[in-house]
View 1 (cartoon, rainbow over the protein chains, first blue to last red):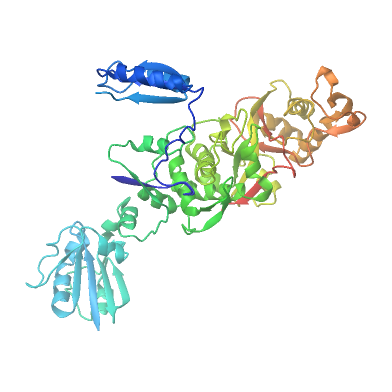
View 2: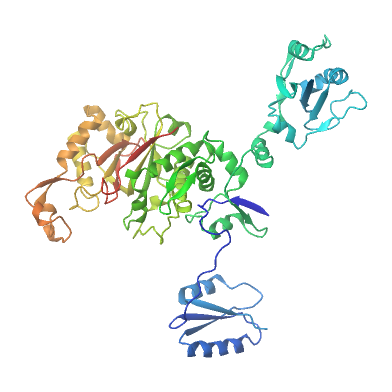
Length: 91
Length: 475
């Protein structure tokens, strides 16, 4: 492991902080990313129902295969179209 | 109680030559021998004598050895003599004995391995002589070092040189200032900024250690109250700090003041300006979308730094105008937008060319705005020649431009020319100067071919209400 010297004023903690949690999903575009494992579609369909009831706008995406990372174009599409994304790791 | 320390390496011819001397001294006095490259060297020592292995160079570093052989003499643990290389009479005096007459009177030694290129910094890091205070950010084995810098938000968008401890130690060798010396508080967070933090950001920007004094002076200039760095960062306007370097140091570090001086391709120009911006980003916390609210920005906010071409100029330099001597090296900062060209390939008289300049300068910010933005006029050598041939001083050119840039109020008030932008109606019967007093500055730079000059317009809040150009001597 190597280390760098911190170039900042060290006002923020060293470890990266997750983005703040959404208070509500109402009216937000929620991406549902199916990683293309069996029965992931079942899980995502149920999430769609629950999210719709909660006032969110589900949007569906799928990776071509669970064995590889998502293609750049798909990640860009999700980042452009969604406020929030849920990745379904069904098995 | 007297004792001796001898530091040698087998790779040195002089060290090999003095092996009999080491053997004689080992027999007659209390002696420690440190060997930098072979713990079995020197040979011919008494049977029970132990040579100390210094291949890690810890002792050589601690003893500040520069040459081998070095003989140190201690009396009561105090170093009283230090002999470098071979000087028979000096060694005989210090050791209190005579050595073989077959040895020459004098032979220089070799460089200590602790002084090999790059080794001094490695040893400084390893043995802790340089106490750096910055927090260590651990990078996982799988992380790409350049991507790690992006991920942590340190980059201006271009790749950074990862700020490893050894690179920072090397950078700090560019200044005599102490690493923990604080130059001031950097806006917008007003976080204290040490020389060490400047050095870290200079590493990331790609600076050489010899640029560091310029970067330090640029940061100090940016923190001068009259420069108004906080407002300059926060403004919706285009501007960012432009760095102008004057004096012999600009030439010594190879800055470009000639062809493409305002463009790319010169390491010093590119990285000094970038280092200042990275200090503001990383130490100050000033980032686009955060406190930096610029509507459009300008490409100079990556880096905007050049040197004035003083050596061939018929005019006094900008720094001389500011009261500094020609021998002083200075950094000046200006709250600048981008570059606007002035093309005039036909004027051969200063009267005509100054009118071209004035026509270009009238549109700074907006043709109807007066005394808002300052400007720098960068005059190229071929344009300067027109003034040189006619005997026009810089002061004369400024005075002529001042006259040419008097704006009739009726032309610049609200509604004039069918344009809503403009000054209040009450100014319609007045004549107003385009630039505030001292708001137009002239420097010389550029390539030897091309009848072009450049206007670098300034922040719309130039002057006391916002930013005025500042100059610091590079120490």
